[in-house]
Image 1 (cartoon, one colour):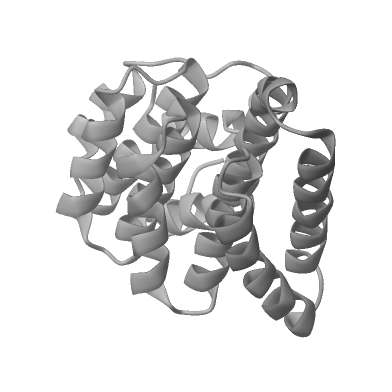
Image 2: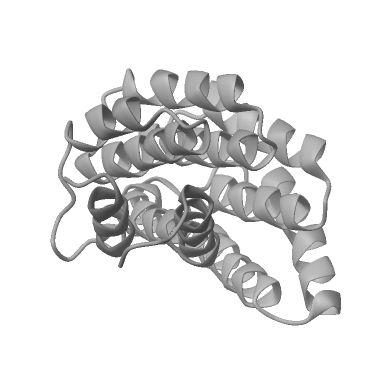
Amino acid sequence: MKYETEEQQIDAIKSWWKKNGNSLVYGLSAVIIGLSGWNYWQSSTQAHSESASHLYEQIRAGYQGDNDAAKVAARQSREMMNEFADTPYAEQAQLLLANYRYEQGEVDEALSLLSTIRDQSKVTANRMIAMIRLAKIFEDKKEFPQALTQVDQALSANPSKSAVAQLKMIKARILLTQGKREEARDVLVSFEVAEDSPLKPLNQLMRDELSL
């Protein structure tokens, strides 16, 4: 699809990302839980693990509910972070809490929660998710230098192909917003998006607009 103005194109790109961006991060989170859960299961008591798992499911469901349920989930996230810090669920709850705080307009707290994971987590994938979210928040705030710095920091951390695609899409989108079409084109040709990736429609939209 072609747009009459660059502003229309950028608005379409932003609209797609706003609708689909968080689901990409949550998808990565689900993978992390699956991969790390078994290792944790072998090193902890069954009761403790089951309690953490049950609480985490309550938290996830709460954030998907109404405002009152989300507030309860936010309190439960803190409980998870304090009482189950030795489980893989604690940082997942922290990531969800950061997203909730951002949606509530509590940007500084969201940045603090994500920065803590980025700087302290021992799980590489969690650190990567935090960096992607930080880059998106800085982009939303139009703090483009900080966003690009975060993207470059994440790209230097040997991310997966999926993470590379997300990060470079953010970078290309920022460059387009700044009117730097040639630089955005250079970024887009530097990576590929899998055919079954949820990023594929947005990637194709951007490539079409830049005649790639």
